[in-house]
Image 1 (cartoon, rainbow, N blue to C red):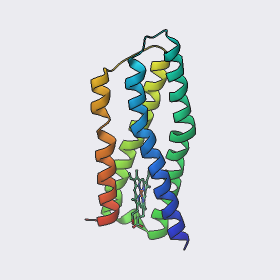
Image 2: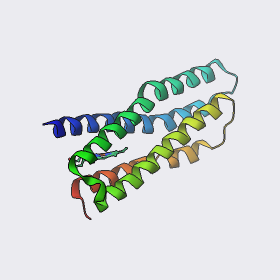
Image 3: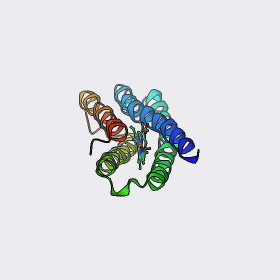
Image 4: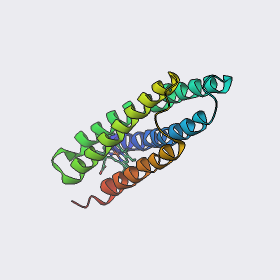
Length: 141
Ligand code: HEM
């Protein structure tokens, strides 16, 4: 029973986390389309901060805690699929930290990437998430 509750919680927070990871770079694209000193610029900075504070950071923490509890529960640490999944989710977590850093840079007026580059980058978490789901469901190795 505990296992199913952990898994339900894990999947729910994975959905929140992924939603935030898809939304934030879209925010960056719209943010960068407005003038640096405009009132709209300040509104985007506020939206990005809130998305990170309310959705992204709490979801990252809960997904990790529940994921690791699940791993302990089913004894996944010695299994190949789990090592591969860990590598993917570490990559996704690094991407999350990079996004948070990009939001801080944007708030300081630095626009390091073009809208096109941000849009292309936004494809990455979708591919990583798809691979992570295949690994946990199919467990190919
Ligand atoms: C962040 C660290 C994460 C850890 C440590 C972790 C670990 C785990 C573990 C151990 C399971 C249980 C597998 C089983 O019962 O056979 C699980 C289930 C699952 N995980 Fe994660 N996970 C993480 C992140 C993610 C992410 C980012 C996604 C998707 C994008 C994801 C999607 C799923 C799904 C869909 C299941 C349920 C699979 C099933 O039906 O058995 N997890 N996770």
